Length: 135
Image (cartoon, rainbow, N blue to C red; front, side):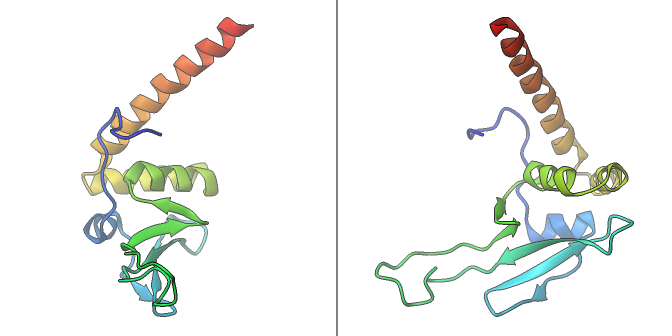
C-alpha cells in the first residue's frame, strides 16, 4: 500500500491503544513488551511493542542503526489503525471484529476506520471490475 493513503490514517500510539482498551505495557525480555485487548471469547488479542533502541544490533552490528519503538504481531509491523484492524479480521471471529469496531466507536477512532473501509470497498470493486474485463 503506497503512502500517502487515500483515506484518513490514525497512527498507533500508546494513547490510542489505551483509549481502545489495550492493557498497559507488560515488560518482556528487556527490548520488547506486550499489550493485550479483550475481545470476548478468547483470553485476549496480543500485540508486541518493540522498544526503541539506539542500535538495532544491540551494539554488535558493523553499522549503527536507530530502531524506533513500534508495534508488531506475527512479524507484521503495525503502525496504523487500519493495519491493526486487518490483523484482527485475519485472526479473530466475526463477533470479536464487531467488538473491536464498537471499541473504535467508543474511543472516537471510528471515522478513521470507516474511511479505510470505504476506501477498501472502492479498491476491491475496481480490482474485481478489472478481473471481469480480462475474462
